[in-house]
Structure formats: C-alpha cells, structure tokens
Image 1 (cartoon, rainbow, N blue to C red):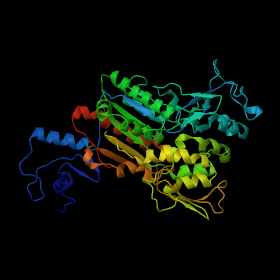
Image 2: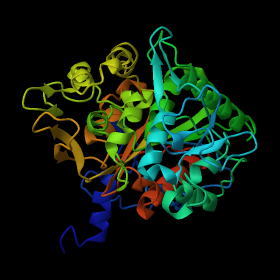
Image 3: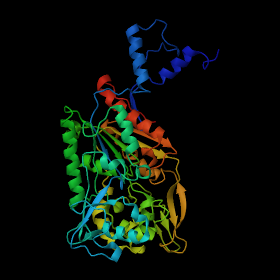
Length: 478
C-alpha cells in the first residue's frame, strides 16, 4: 500500500505540515502541533480522549468557524457611489438651461430636498448635463479645499443605518441594489440594523488630504465615523467593532485608523475587513480623467459627465500611486508622450485639466506616498482573474476618443498591484495578522452579490466572532 493509500500515513503527512506556529510571506499562520516519533508515523501509544478532542476541534476550526450569538457590532463603509445622496437648491443656484431650473426635479420633500444620486433621469442627455452641473465640486485655491457648486447643498441620509446603502434608488430595487444582498446575509447571521449592524454613508465626491491641508467634508466624516464606532461599541457592552468596507471606503478606514492612537484602535476595533480596496489607486481613474466614464451605462455619453468626474476630490485620490505602481512602465501613452504613475501632473495638464495639478501635487501625492499600515488585524477579500485596464493607448493623441486598452489582472476596476498593496507594505514586526483571500472571476462590485463571495465574507465574520469563544485567532492566506 502506498503512502497516498495509507490513511494513517496520509494523516501523518497532513498534520506534520502543521507542526508549528510561524510567520511566513508576511502572514501569520496558526497551526496544530503534533508529536511525531521521528519516523513519519503517528506515535504508537493512543492519544487520550481529551487530547484527541482538543486536536479534532482545533483542526476543524482551521476550515470552518461557527459564529456565536454574542456578535461584535459591525459597521459597513460603502465605496464611491455606494449610498444615496440628496441635494437642495438655494437662490444662489444659476441653471445652465431651462431644464435645469430650480423646479427640476418635481419630486422634492417639503423642505426642497431631492435624491441626486441615484436618479434615473441622469440617463437622458439634457438631464445628464444638469447632473454634471449640480454634482461638480470646485477647488478653491485661496481656501485650499473643495466645495459644492454655488447654490447646491448636499447631505447624506440615515447615517448610522444601512438604509441608504441597500439601494441607490429605492424605487428601482432590482437594478440599483448595492449592499442589500450582503445585509441580508448578515441578518441571517444575527445582525440587526441599528442594534449591532450600522452603516456609515458619506458624500463620496469628497476625499481627504495630506497633513497640513484642510478637508472639511472628509475630516468631518472621519469624526462622525469615529463617533459611530465608539457608540456602537458602547451600546453593545463595550465589544470592539468589526469594520467592513468596500472599495473607496477602505481608504477612509485606513486613514481613520492611521490618524488615531494605537490605544484607541485596540479598545474599539476588533477587525478590519476590506473588500476590493484600491490601496494604490487604479488605471481606471486615468481613463476617467482622460475620456470620462459612463460606468457601463449604455445611454450616457461619458464626455457629458467627464467635467464632474474630474472635479471629484475622491477621483484624484484614486489616481495611480507612484509608491504602488511602477514608475518605469507607462500607464497611458500617445504618439508623443508616455505617462507613468510618476507623471500624473503632466498627464493632467495634457488632457486639458491643468487646474487639477495643484491639488494633486500638494494634497493627494503626499497623502498616498505616506502609505502607513494600521495596527489592527486585517482581512482583504479581493476579486481576481477579471480583465482590468492596465495600459491605455490614445492612437492619435485625442483624449475625447476611447483609447486602445491592454488588459491585465484585477477585479475589472482595480489592478492587482493595487489590490495587493497592503500585503506588499505589511510589516512583519507588527505581529498582527493579515489575511488575503482571492476570489477568481469575482468583479469589483460583484463581490457584494456573488454567492461564493458572500459566503466567504460571512465565514470571515463568523470566524472573527468565534475568536473570543475559542481563544484562538484563525488566519491564513487563502
């Protein structure tokens, strides 16, 4: 009988590989110790019943985790465009056309507020222009910060709740569902909105800036998120909180954790789960700045929304970081120029957006170059094997026309080098666990809906909630 056919030797082989606890490849692995007689066999003397029971329980927990009813509070932080946004128009608002007057849209509440994101009328060209005008941000050089268009007020709704994260348009639930499948899965685990499950929506057009620069909207959001974390913990018996972010939300969480004391994180943060986080930006952001991005919506002319997309502070934040992307390989090329991640200022000038250079070089570049890893346990769940823009070639140098695209690996939006940037910068000396799970064929937004992806997310949350009951931290590279 061969070793492969001998169940006793096969078991010895399997458990011998789990012979110690060690750190490798910047990941912490918890493995099972087992006595070996030196000849590749299990010891002849039988294990005691208690020892066998403990060994069996530990082995099973390496593969499955059962959540307890004593759940840690969980906060969902959405990505860009991942929650509803409302607007109101004041007398200062100056419409650019008759259709864009203060009376549009007709469906407003008693105080004049209406949902600006998402509104299906944006699919029609005349109203796309209204959307572009009303969503646009303006960088005020003398104030060194971003502001709404004159006469446009905006607000988020239901902060602290998951309500505005479920659907972008509650009247079109099937086609605008965002975190609804994930929230349903969490409810099956025992989470309840407003009790131990919370949402942290924000104005996703805004971002953050490097130290020494104001960012009134983004900074307020970080303060609100910090307050929500503390409140969620206090209302759940002092249990630390699990943070679950998607896309851009991961960058906000990263900044929150890095801008607060380690003692605060140790008290209030149980674990950080980042889904599809663009740690180092994306080539897709360069495509958006150059040619506009219809985001897959067939009726929208990308050039009609390009101006608004260029004005977005968070979009500038998502341009490829020279600390993550190669500074030797061009990301965008024309017959006369090539632009790497180090050439973003020249790129912004050449596409006709020179006003973006100052905020990028003074506010964003120092922020992304100061890539700091937070001192908390982290799990990254990412899609892979989906063709993702890697190089853009504008054959005639016309940025108004779609480029030829060379694709590489990623989740369809974020490049693999960016998805793995946290792993690449992880410090072994921190002794904190980092887990990275790759899901083949799962896209950037599909990770919130794909059945296997949802199972992985729920499994991870179950494992985190099981840690207190077992006293064992289970982390690995999947």
